[in-house]
Length: 242
Image (cartoon, rainbow, N blue to C red; front, side, top):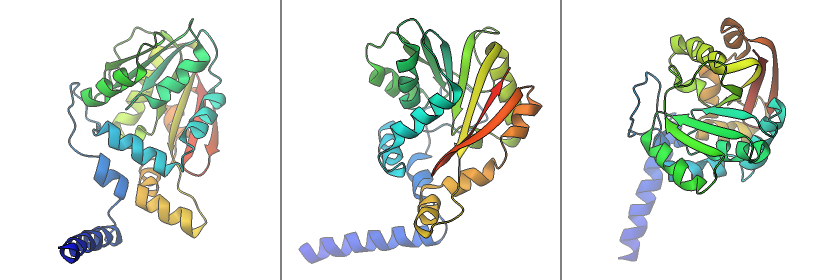
């Protein structure tokens, strides 16, 4: 019986290895499955929030919090500000953003996946300055000039090419004059055999190729003073002003 079980496990590992060598990505194959979507979108919505959280921690070597805090520092979120997280997923980034805005500020996270929003709301608990609702990138359900900061992390590659600039224009619409935009996307390392291999396994190389340039998108959407930066090993970002 023990040998039979071992044989089954070995066969499963062999099959997984075959998929990886055939170019399949581990992260997308586990997470990018059919999701319970309540808002109509032409973008790609994710499901399996618990599994997503586990895979994200593994992908960032347990340093996801530090990486995302570097993004928060880059855009300069301050106490009392209103912040919108577009494509918030599990709400992890939104919960981090709620810390610097404090009790006088507010963070709102939107995502087209009802499954993700339920998880984000449950995980946020009794936090009064962090709220979540179903919504889409291309049609933000907020009045003009409502937020001080709009952020969107690892979302652009889920949108069709022709929807990216319109989505950024929607983000600009809900920003107050002088407000800031942060867009973070995947970064594929250019050297290091181990990092390059992990980039392929987790799908970061594929994501990076899908949206190779962020600055032109922001400029086309009407943003000014666009500056770029990186949070190695997996993230690159732009910060822009309205």
